[in-house]
Length: 471
Image (cartoon, rainbow, N blue to C red; front, side):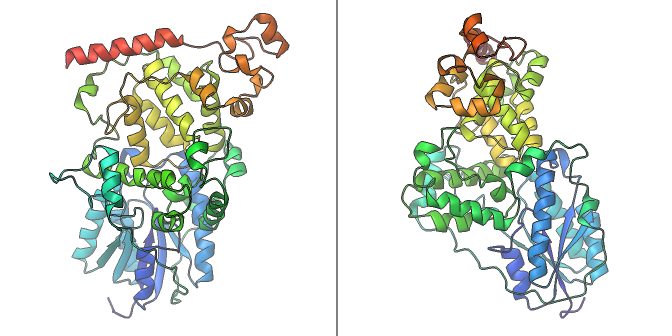
């Protein structure tokens, strides 16, 4: 391989030009750069779900357009990374591969295997970190162990300046003849049935759209984030999570843009919470499928399997839960406060394993991040790090009232739009006449509750005590 030959930049979950360390290093090499994306559908049990694949398709199209402005384009390939990448390197004559590390356990192991295979052929692999602000093992307790409680991790994180300044995007990629290859459509990322209309209405994947959302967030919601983030009917969050997940915007850029602004600390804590979740996944790679606290492996899940389907469809009879699940199906996203409520409902009201909920979120969320998804579900189930106690059971009725979710419910459960506020969160308590005036007949226009809150709460507590007695 000639030192004057091209280098290969392999994009993964870093679909941006700005603050992309691997891309910047490839451009700074002074050699021609070939940019590629390889879809490896053999990424173990956590291959991308349907909503993620939709987002990925459109994000790749946006990235390809940006690369054209720099004199490059994306080359697409599909298949096992360890087979396809060496073939592409041979085809293009590249002597060096640049990539940003992937953080899912299976993907990380695949990268190590592929780098070793390339090394045997004399191909260098240059790795960089783009998905996080710091390395997932950068912080440790005084005993040298990973943090399992967030507050001391946060204090350690902010104790000294440690977030590197973001890198500027390269202004030009040295032109090079591009290899022939199939189009983006050959990756078959888009759904075969037209369920994605709501995704198209709400989202515009790509780095430029992420910048627009960031500017909207900086104008007002950031300053009022602490009080606005828990109200589903208020546009009080950044909605940057899918852009951050797909690497369309850099967490380092977000940190430095927001740090020091009025009201920014609560949102910056969420950004560091993401780092904390990745630290946990790095040190405990079994947790996407198994509880961190081993005693929960024996938890007596015995809820009716039919309840899972009712939860997925937003037909539980609890308006806040149903609104959240319908928002998820329509838009590929759900307000974070509602995510906690629906997760608690599945686990504790319906006694279904948290893994079932994590799988559903993985398939339906456009921001289906393995570290955050795992951490959030284990937090709710009480079996993870810094977890909410199992006996903390969200009441979907009082949660809806506390966080003023009335308009949110009416938006996503339009059958209830005429129900008065006093009945909206528990319509089964209304008289037949009152519901009739609102155009509702329970069991026909809107389901009756599939479980009774008080009975379900007691059943959850009894199951928890049964687990503790057997441990």
